[in-house]
Image (cartoon, rainbow, N blue to C red; front, side):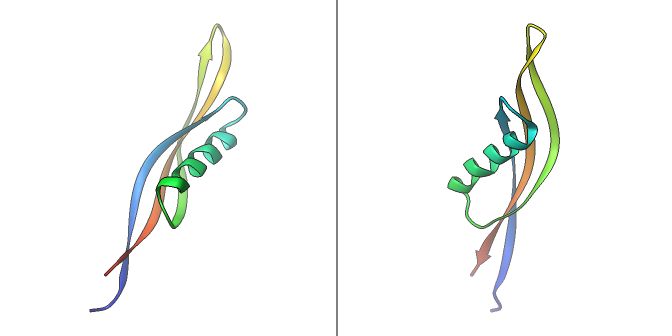
Length: 71
């Protein structure tokens, strides 16, 4: 039987008080502890949390793929 691979996809939301980029980094950093062999993260959506007229957090939703070997 030939070897192959399967790519799994999960959606994650990262947050940051500083930027959307940092929110994405936080999501990838956290995902790397749960998933191995991360491949690509696609930004799906970005938004902000607002409190009393001020932006208090940036949020980035990612679609993240990781590779998994098939026996």
